[in-house]
Image 1 (cartoon, each protein chain N blue to C red):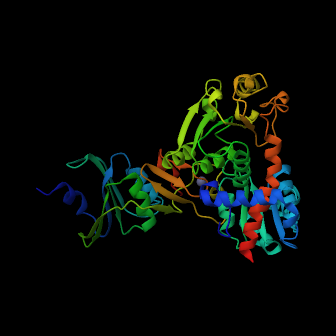
Image 2 (cartoon, each protein chain N blue to C red):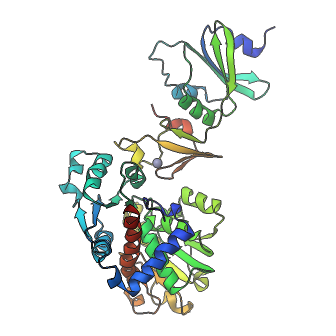
Image 3 (cartoon, chains in turn brown, blue):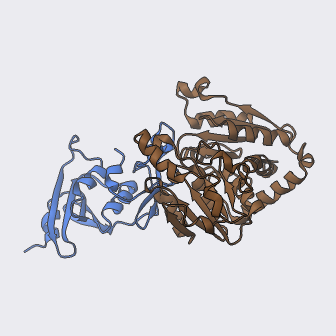
Length: 304
Length: 153
Ligand SMILES: [Zn+2]
């Protein structure tokens, strides 16, 4: 990968993805070898909406490379509330840091912000748009547990607004995968993602029901269906209930089915799945640190 | 007997005649040009005029006005076979078809209300033109229906 911005999974080639994943594997095998690799490097954290998990994961990654963070802090305490534009904010903060991580509620925010800065900018989630570093750790987890060749993956839940889904779907077009999308009709893939998958010639199937494809899957990637997508509580419960799994659901699946989730979960994966061999979502979350270390290592290397 | 085009075009002294507009799009063409009747531009409109080529068509004539490239780009999206006649001294001095651009900047608003280009940021809207519609390069939203409704005022 060029020392550049990381805005969308659409920009990632198979080679880009594999080079990050290979480095992440080296890091995971011998983290101490990387402990002083970027001594003194500073990562600017700009989180315009709360995301404890992603933020902590980036903080851990840069610190384990010998660097540190400068954190804009919560939005209500910052100048954003006083009406400063995002374009101004990133231009100020790039002067404090060697790379920036941006989480922002508007789609396209990271792309626009990147046009205003010279240091590498990483999109850590732009509204319902993209979340490419989540995708890198997702694909790392898939590769470690199921391999990436001839893969059959089910992606279930809120496919319309789920940025982790959009990024993952794009990135998987680089590999020989069949993607099964499982959701209620109202939360099916957005037109733009469907358009790209079609353009890429991806093997894609859409379903409203998990049961009949579950036995064919190597990986099941579950995402949360949010209450606010529905007009009322009863409709939400009725629909969301059809896209939850528990140990019983997994009774008839292949022994090596890998169950993933970007977390946090609410009740879409029952806790009785946690102790089965299928559950990999905590491992997946842990993989965020070596994968983000690998990405930061590449980006900061390019800056030197 | 004069032809249909001469009849309707010859009365303008100088300005632009946009001919072969898809029927029903004349008012949207005016919207693209930012013409709402509040300025003193002299404008004539023909709607559902018989046309050999199109069956029926719309025509818009604007006195004393030539079109910018951005205006032509958006025009091409809603009236893909329109012809532009530049008139000086009652004569057609230039005549060309609209070209479908590969991208349009600053003339359409993204239909996604959560797109960064709809916020108070120093960024122009920017769309890639697809075979069927346009696509926001910032948020990826594809707009196919009713492009004219997305024209920035
Ligand atoms: Zn947009």
